[in-house]
Length: 68
Image 1 (spheres, one colour):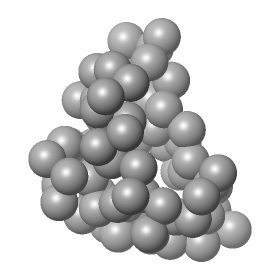
Image 2: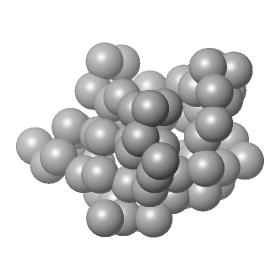
Image 3: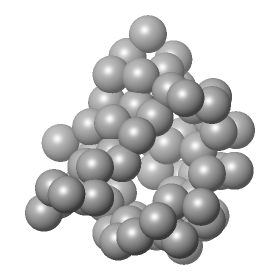
Image 4: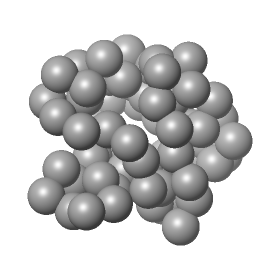
């Protein structure tokens, strides 16, 4: 299982609600978190998926992510 960290443009709780179904599909429920207190809005994913799968899921939801 990989732990991946991404800088995102997710800004608030409503944004998290919007990306939840997409990230749950590729990473699984409770395998990811977004730190809204961080200036980078860090998304941490602990799941077997690849960085590209996570980035594509966020793009489908209308957000961007850069692997750190």
